Image (cartoon, rainbow, N blue to C red; front, side):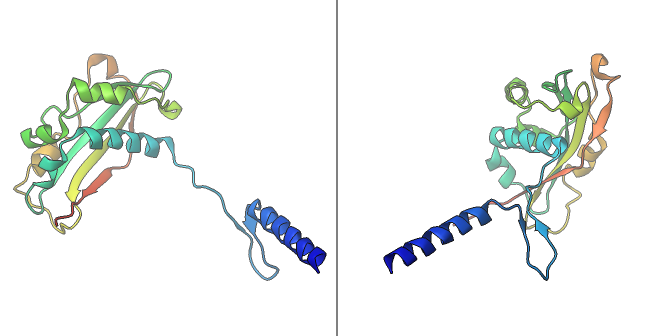
Length: 183
């Protein structure tokens, strides 16, 4: 009896281990479903790593205190060198003073962005530009008395002469919904 039990246990373990290694699930009467990880594009990865650095650097307390339905819009223009490493970062020159206090675009932020260890080979020698919208998650409308119109008009940065001839790649906008929990 013990031998039968041990044999069934070993066979079950072997079957479970084998089924864990399958990359598809099949049934005689069904369609085969392949389970594969979704690969993000380099543009998506670039936006995510830039937004992580911005998120850690910015003053969230100032952002969370903005009035209801108030939004900020800006762009990040990332110049990549011939290896795909971040070389230069441009932010809009006419960014609102409130947004400057929140984002704190200066030498410290630029240094953090340049130290991102990822190489973006799809963007070698190019400029990747993407708009960023900061919006409270629960807001359903837009207050046009905010700095939105001015920020929108000044969304694109002014590039230095050395970067003016580089190809510009426009990435999809990044909407940064934010919220906070009040006890």
